[in-house]
Image 1 (cartoon, rainbow over the protein chains, first blue to last red):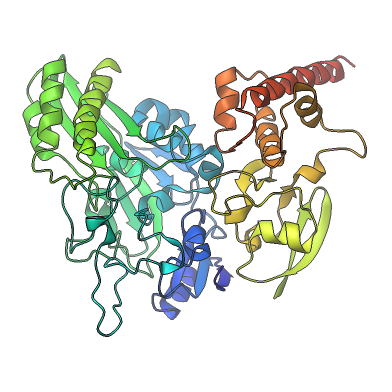
Image 2 (tube, each protein chain N blue to C red; image 1 turned 180 degrees about the horizontal axis):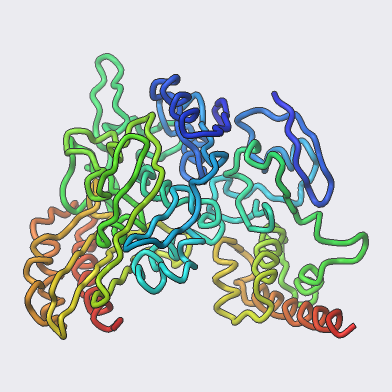
Length: 333
Length: 163
């Protein structure tokens, strides 16, 4: 593993000033399950010089249920979220998502903020010793042009909604679709921002989120869903344990009798950022949620998809998944 | 290099470690506790599982500075002298060990789970061990061993309670 300095921050101020001092060459570490792997494999052309441990900062962990809003501290471990009774009953999609992240060990270490801010798993990008210096990594040597190796390579797990600046990598987070469908907001050291808005515009392919290098997530806030709403999440992966999603999906549906009053759906691992199928949401609202209607929503959800040579199966999967999740929401009541 | 203190298997230890060292490297290379195995070294196989304050974690992904002042249990800390832990005994009895490389991680994951629930269903055991890969046994004997250990540990707890 490449050498780095390790700092234990005792306060957010100290952590922020350490991060600022390294001007982007230092990274926050909490659970460490993503960043340590990147450093061990020497994935990046310019590895981080320092890690700033924020686990030593008090008050960033725990789940608090208050006036109409659930507050989850940034350092709350995924295992604790998956087994929290309030989350399981009122925010079912999030509990279901947290419960299927990687393995029990990773969930004991990994935090909610880390799961939101994690890096991509594109196998060209993550290949050890920077063997594929791709467009996502930037910093072309003089005379070198950067490319996306997935576009002509093995792209079975890549984007079905096209590239951003030639990069075809997808966001692999399990919890993000649930958080977006539930309307969650992130509180950071700089701002308060909806989870759906933390992703960069399509001209910045090297960044997973717009969170700055000296900005730290403090808390995730989720408004309490309507009593008449139900949520569900499902992930398709090769193995039940360990694997990242091929496609995953969460939905929150608010019912008035059989009729859909309001509906939020979010797919992930299909595009560089989570994908909200607005067409599908729109056609569901004001109509009874029949099996046929759920299937039509599945079709609408993948409208405009542009499969790569090896991943058109993901379109079929996404369609079926949206249908399945909508029916799961209906049956959950 | 800086000096770091933590508890391993009941002993307070003090080691010099580099900033970029993992707990796995410190345990194996500085403390000679080679029962903790280096498998994939990337957090996917579970061979490096140890208990940190009683919870199962992957020592290959944990910078060693994160254990400052905390309590680590490795496979070497389970037996009491020549007397094996009931889980170790059960793995032996059930034939749950073949090459043995995954066994320390399996046993520690199982211990963390049984410490919270001594009446596990088959599915609970499989889920608790979902982060430990084994390429020999096919897992059937491993799950049987954990069930057997749970029975023995329940009996022991009941006997102690009756005393």
